[in-house]
Image 1 (cartoon, chains in turn green, purple, brown, blue):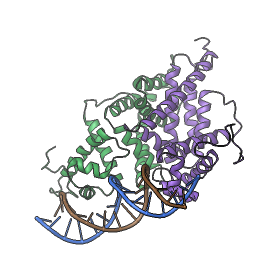
Image 2 (cartoon, chains in turn red, orange, green, cyan; image 1 turned 90 degrees about the horizontal axis):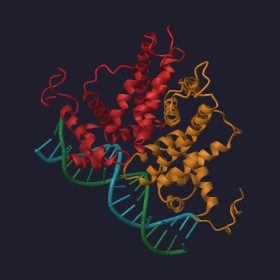
Image 3 (cartoon, rainbow over the protein chains, first blue to last red; image 1 turned 30 degrees about the vertical axis):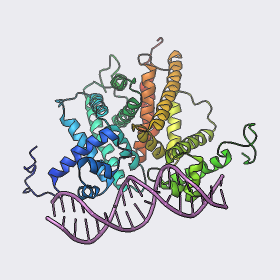
Image 4 (cartoon, rainbow over the protein chains, first blue to last red; image 1 turned 45 degrees about the vertical axis):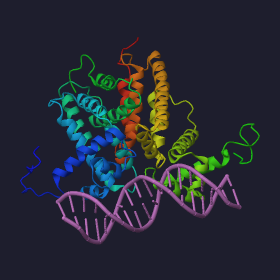
Length: 206
Length: 206
DNA sequence: GTCTATACGTCGATAGAC
DNA sequence: GTCTATCGACGTATAGAC
């Protein structure tokens, strides 16, 4: 990730300085990790980076857009970290993501804050963002689940779309519960869903 | 609910005026229903009630405590509404609660906002509140689930405590997904969990 | 393009008069 | 119990230095 090399061949000039933007996002993640996301102000983030809060708004249109960008940046980082290209089953994918999420301080809080804000009417940007995001995640999961059904690795008397929604909800909700009560076994509890989804013994067809 | 009659025999004088407090909570719910919870200010709530924001803080120590009180008040109202004393299975309880929640405008958003805030270190009050709340709900659900196992109405190869956590997570998460995408069948999707938990045919023991 | 300075209106919260 | 006045901090916007 050379700062001087443009990632795409657009001749080095990007809207609002991509390299600097990345730098800001990296620093902002650390701020949220230390101070949380719910109440952290533009000014405190700017101070931690060493610029004025007005300079921050040169790269991001608003506080919420900064928060969104930070979350997506942190998520990309999270996914780039390990070597897990083939995660196996749909439940395994969610277990891996949930486990990685709760390891990043402030990430689940940031996500929860953004989702709560997205529920607000009068926040069409955030609402559209997360509506689309949930939709995409559910679709990808459902597709994986259908493949598992076809392979005989999952019971066929449940709707993959509904199981996908259930899986996303369970993963999101359990991360929150785990952060408040770490004695809850995050992976094992999601594993219960995996166990429930296994085809009954002697099942051969769909 | 006569405003002049004390509910308990404490000689009419209550800390910070119980009757007026209830009145404020009732009005505040309507404000959140119309304007959402994430960004709504003390001043706008006060204005809708017809008092100053400083007067509001005479009854509630802070904005967050007001939000918490409003949520609990709305929840009590929700539970007092219908005639459903015996809800049946654990899943039925959560289906009923989830269905009722999404019908109250702003309630899920309020809940999500408070939970997100509770994840923040430096918010010990909210954190303790929801840690305790999740704990209580999980315990009640687990107890119900154990009874269902004993009665042969639920498979016995899964841990009731873990299923309880899973059920709470699924219910919370699906309410959010439904608000963003109402085409998701809330009750049926939670019903999938009920189906998965049913004992396999021919099962007689634990 | 990057950034500082500055200003505006609003926020949660507090102090004190009535 | 409720008000007004006031505080410091907030998100946002703009003007302009370099």
